[in-house]
Image 1: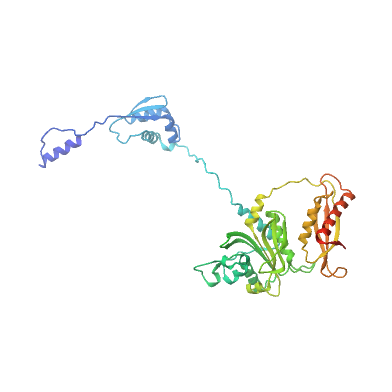
Image 2: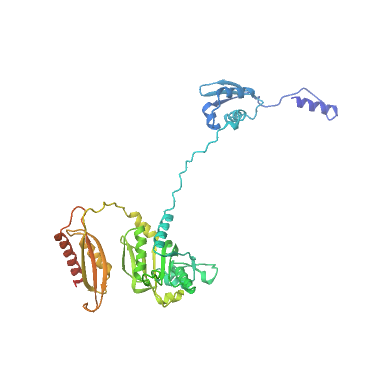
Length: 427
């Protein structure tokens, strides 16, 4: 009002206008003091600290407000000149500002979001690395892009139409996503051989890509040269099929359980030196000897044999999820060992013989707990087209000491099954 009167006086003084009547208030609605409710619990929750009631009353009254206590807080009358105080939160702000935000105690907010569990694939891959490095192999990391000609031998079931090509490759040597980890490993083997490293054992954990299966995780290994380093205590030995088979078994044992091997064929592997890896009845990979043509194409030494293996880690993880872990007490009773030398057809895989022995050994009087092949012989005394296989059978009962009659009965049951199903005879 004072400002309006001063402005009117100045305009009259300089001749910019003249007063023609008294002051008239044209405001359509008269403004009165506002009544607001300030809840005690609301004040403490929003400020994050407790303010003494006497301080709340003192602060609000010092700001020209009337304060009356109620059951759960205060009723506050806000004067008309405080046009900025319209809601309860405005009263909370005034109390906090004048009481002092520096009095707030620092506190870490509650973490309601649970921590994200680690990806199980990380621990799985770390376990595979430990197993294979303990077996003397070295890890390699190769490109996910390879040449189409190098990818074709490893196309799933020979279906080259499932290879994934790149529309804008960096070069012709990197125009296809790898369908297998083996092409990159074989290129690394060839590179090592060109630099004078004859004994090379490599493995890789990574992704493969096809249009049919999409992206799948796997582990592959390539092994050539000596299986063990040359040492003064004994001569070195060349790597063979059973070395790479043992590495595959170690991975399966660590991840999913005991592996079985059955004869198979792959376009890039030598017939008769190829086996499919089976865990819990599901095929999870393949092991075998690389054909000379594929080895030469990849740059690997044609004069030395190259053994490879590749397994699907996703399938192994699925089998592992379904597997139950059982804890058994330590054996308290002695075991009994029986050896048998069998003459069978040389075309009969040892894995089939093992399966027959295990199937027939579960129903005998003496439980069969171990089957081990320890000798293979062909020559004088063995008919042509046959082979002599020596197998060691271990019997043990968890609750009693086996008698000779128990073991003999179980042993005879196993021999009868071998004769009946495979035409085997004791040597």
